[in-house]
Image (cartoon, rainbow, N blue to C red; front, side, top):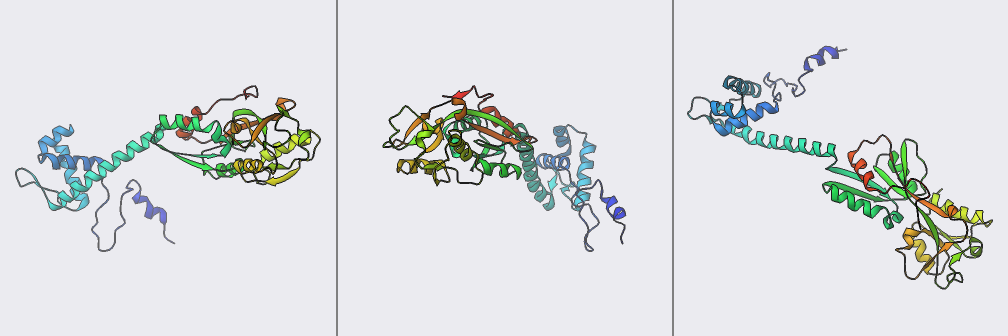
Length: 332
């Protein structure tokens, strides 16, 4: 078995060394550095060692040594030193063109890396539920985009429950949803506490009431959403019925909020939504507060993100979200 330690050790410290084939010269072909390329480009522009050295703020012998070393590494003469003024060889002209592109590309890479590190460039992936588009999310997106126009926003509409998997798989930086559960390794921030309201068709007998008792809805089909296993908002709505001593009369299950509201408009039952959604609701549906203690009618919009996520874009976006520390901050 070969001794790989002895074979590999000589390559340490020379990351640009190319392994030679049997017909290749014994030269460190890729052992160039940016400084050598910068020196050569300036020399190619000045075609004079003295002026190039002065422009580079180095001694002329040091510049000459850099160019000779570069020629030795590449195995090609780059400058015709016998002509006055200096003249680039064909290989030198080729290298000059390519070196300019390499240096410009490196400058862009450095600038882009710096901007990403400062949070002024890059991307931010956000998972969101549709109901957040009626309240906390649009102002936050607007503020963030105005402050960081070069950062690409990748938006993914998904259920709150789906956001948990997306966070664990690192497909999104942050998830914004309703009635979110606590996730290991993630931080949960409350953004908005608001009352739920019941959505009814205008012809429903209770539509004329100022408030509605859950007990009075016992005979009206309940339209639940989202249609997803163990969906927390569905459980929250069902708990309202159970707290009133009623078995939830589930008639339909919808995948998303607008479908549920459309079924209400069609007279197929009632559903429950947050007040922020009701303010942007359909004209063919009426919305009523529930009778009883307000504290039991509160639903919460939250932001969840990985606690160890060091993305500067995430931190900047968090600053654009509203703060809501307690259930005393309720949208009424």
